[in-house]
Amino acid sequence: MLPPMAAHEIFLIVFLILFSIHVVLERVLTVLNLRYVRAHAGAVPEMFKDAISAENYARSIEYTAARARFGHVTAIFSALLTLAYLFTEYIQGLTLLASELSNYLDHPFSELTLSVVQVAIFLGVNTLIWLPFNLWDTFMLEARFGFNKTDLKTFVMDRIKGLILGVILGLPFLYAALYLILYSGPWGWLYAGCFVIAFQFAMMILIPLVIAPLFNKFSPLQDGELKSSLEHLAERCKFATCGIFVVDGSRRSSHSNAYFTGLGRARRIVLFDTLVEQLSIPELSAVLAHEIGHYKLKHILKTMVFGALYTFVGFYVLDKAIHWAPLYQAFQLGNHHIHEKGLLAMMIISGHFTFWLGPLMNALSRKHEYEADAFAARATADSGGGGALESALIKLFEKNLGTLTPHPAYSAYHFSPPPLIERVGALRRVSAQIAKSTPAGAG
Image (tube, rainbow, N blue to C red):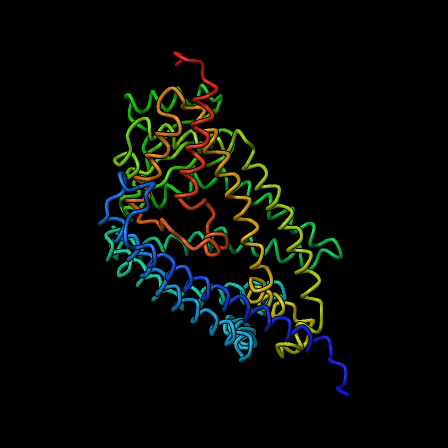
């Protein structure tokens, strides 16, 4: 009869099982998706045969395949990196490096400072490790398909600005969060959660007003038919905003987007300059109505509430884990009172315990997308409605080379917005309902 396993042995086995499931599942889904997409490569789906050219459809399949191959490489590298972090002396080495830095500066670090320094070093090294992949993605893969507009100078400056922001905002944030979780007693996880949520709210104000302008130029939308149409739409939907801005997204990429950001007086509508060039006024109105729909239907509030709950649960688990000896024994981290080691271990392994939440969140997000689409169709019924939004989505698909025929299992796991073919089908059903409910001659 086998002797009973210790808690740390059980924990290690559970982690390795979940880690393997996570890695294998995502690779299998990627292979299934690529085969499925290629199996439908013969002709443009019937629904889009008059709207999407065969050439762009073929290019979208090629782009999907290229991203899948790159995804295989990065996923395998990430898995090996995780194992290296956990089953070598890497974490202990970070502790030693932080201590050596303290000695070099001739200023002994407190336990809190030691924790912050270790986390900062870990994040910095991790960024450097992934830098070649980011360079390849930007200057090779995206450039191959005509998306990349970033030059090396802009790429480097973006990283430098990010580093400076990390020092100015990230280090104080780390100090405060770690102090609360490590030294505030049994309710430290709750205090830390409250602090992080408050910080996120502050960022929602600072990002549009201070941080985003460091990376891009935001210009007020010029007076004209487009501005009048969008302002009229916002007024009709009773959506208060502090302005409509165009961002120079074309400096970095030809991908398109639209969003609204900020809170209160900082709330603004943002359109990519590429989007303004690609879509007509009715189409842009429909896209904006979709974004307004998310706000009016309280999708953002619901997401924020869920995020707050997730934050509190996460900090509660972290609080218990960094004081739990089996975590340290499983990965041979030594004394479980050296909490910074447990913190780093949790940063490395947590995603492999929570990956299954992704499809659940995607399902909720897809539900919200359908609802926002329906809102947009009704809000713009007098200027194109669902037809205008459908036309906009198809144009964006063509410009962004989206995957038109993803495997159902892959899209359920990965897709936050619904696949275009399902989204357009739903839009057409909503448009038909609107047409039936509209009296003859109305509008």
